[in-house]
Length: 100
Image (cartoon, rainbow, N blue to C red; front, side):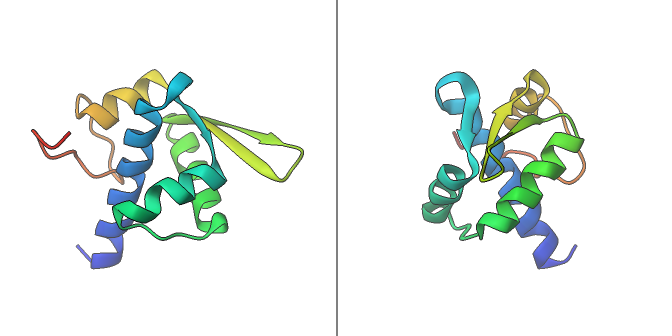
């Protein structure tokens, strides 16, 4: 597997894990970009939009556009299961057991 694919899969897992831990399981794309930065994923707002669309297509999050400037993502029950390693989705890294 190419390095870029590994990074993309890890980024998707990190997004899900962040959403699984925040109140109501929701955050906007700007906050998610800021939260990913210290975890080794410095991504643009546009890249975050693309990742949220991918996660929504796979029913891991729902997305809501607010006045076409902010996207709010909410994790789904399936997304919670993937973040916890109870379900595997190709394109999302499997969590390493014991690293919570």
